[in-house]
Length: 197
Ligand code: HEM
Ligand code: HEM
Image (cartoon, rainbow, N blue to C red; front, side, top):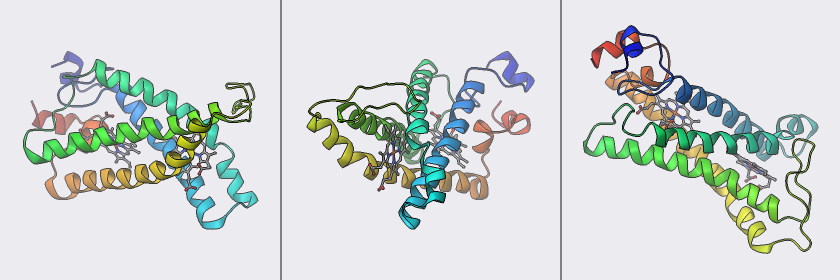
């Protein structure tokens, strides 16, 4: 066990009892940015394109591009901490938890990637931050645009469903099984972490 883990302060890296500072920073900042993305797209779906809705959606490409960079970093960090993270246990529940997290990673990568591919292949310049990231294609690259059109929105909503399942499972762990799952990702977890010592 990491010495600072025993002392109760949170280490940068993950440990076998809880996630460290960097994993938590990535997890919660991405959760907040994703909430913003879904709030905007949800409002657009319900209310259509109105000036108020534009306030929430006008940053969608910018925030989505930032999310793509964050998920790449997060995936690399997960690999760097492999074997050094809280265990999900054996049995069906452990397999289900791992499969659930893996699916979340898959959609977190694919959803922005599909949109970025579409932006790369499109006839329009892609400049979400005010400077050009992708030049306009002439003619557009059909398969990239088709891939983005077919997958971005659909997988986006699938991601929302997976997130709802993930949060519901955390609710079950906290409310029914009271096994300290939340304290691996939130809070200092001193008292709970001792249970695992
Ligand atoms: C993880 C990040 C992202 C999430 C969760 C996300 C989610 C969504 C969702 C749920 C929709 C609504 C689909 C519908 O109307 O049925 C949408 C639409 C859209 N997104 Fe994203 N998005 C992300 C990143 C991006 C990025 C990086 C770009 C630009 C490169 C982008 C561009 C668009 C565009 C242009 C639309 C409207 C057209 C369409 O439905 O495909 N998004 N997004
Ligand atoms: C209110 C919202 C959320 C809560 C309360 C929450 C809670 C948690 C908790 C307690 C864990 C540790 C689980 C364990 O060790 O078995 C965890 C891990 C994880 N969560 Fe969340 N989460 C939330 C939102 C999200 C969102 C929006 C995503 C991404 C789409 C996400 C993706 C993950 C992933 C992939 C893991 C595995 C650890 C990692 O690789 O980062 N979570 N979450």
